Image (cartoon, rainbow, N blue to C red; front, top):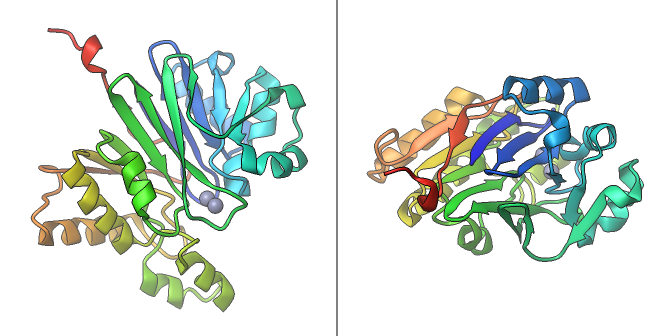
Length: 268
Ligand SMILES: [Zn+2]
Ligand SMILES: [Zn+2]
């Protein structure tokens, strides 16, 4: 598998995943030109993409989908619980829309959706398997529940939200009190320290790479997120770059390209 986040944050989310014969995008909240440029950098023709998977209906996750799907005739997949709202919000031909209520295959990729607490109509994360190579994506998560942990544990690579620093969030003058409460609530977003505690559990389950996602532009910084998480993990004897590789996503550029190889395809 080759995996690359193309953008992450409230200005738009998009992640690219490819198996040996299958290519998918998870969410698309970016302008068409942005996504086409990012795919071009990866050497991916947009008409070779087999599916666009949606986590939830917030605009930063779906804003770009209608144009991309329509231009290249790409099927869209979302949970059945957001069918009505997507039909209203996404101006696409209905034959492009597919709805699921359990796991499914797209080519050689086994897609396992799971419920995530977040204040949209319904929100899922995805565990994506190419045989025993596994990547999981969980952004927009109000709290790290046992359901989410069970769904993503032992994934080699995980994209996990590290949205805000509680002090910066409370001090940010442009957010009204109700919005701060919503973000920090159990159905809002994940703070740096909550993300750190989730990573601690995940490292013990066998995860070795975590990419911090959906980092807020207003109530967080990359340095603060990474430092908070690294020092929490060190206090638990989990050493960054030894026991766990931490990486980051960006608002306006693609992140690291990761490769995961199923055991059956390893040479030697
Ligand atoms: Zn959201
Ligand atoms: Zn979001």
